Image (tube, rainbow, N blue to C red; front, side, top):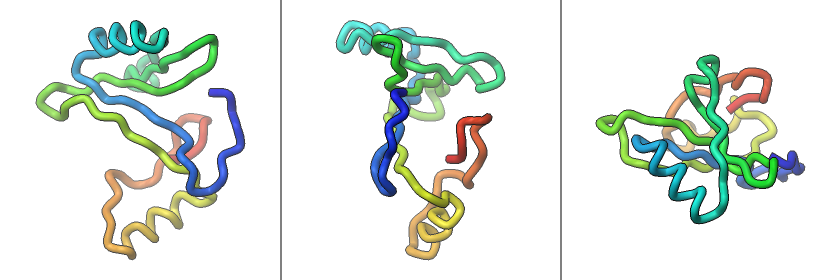
Length: 107
């Protein structure tokens, strides 16, 4: 990614979970010219789509019985733990608890 400064609350990442990684990669490759860079075992196969040497999205395989293809969007937060607590206090539900993502940051 080009590493722009994202204001708090702005979308700052997208990724796709899909049971058909090859078909999805062919589709977005044909549509946008994206190339797939597979991730290693340390990230569970989570890979990146790139365009012109810049990362544009993440992608991972999900078992077909687990979910259909779906995009997820992430938002900038100055304190992910406080944001997750606010979601719960406001009646929402987080899909998972805040966690470190290697040396990239927290989500």
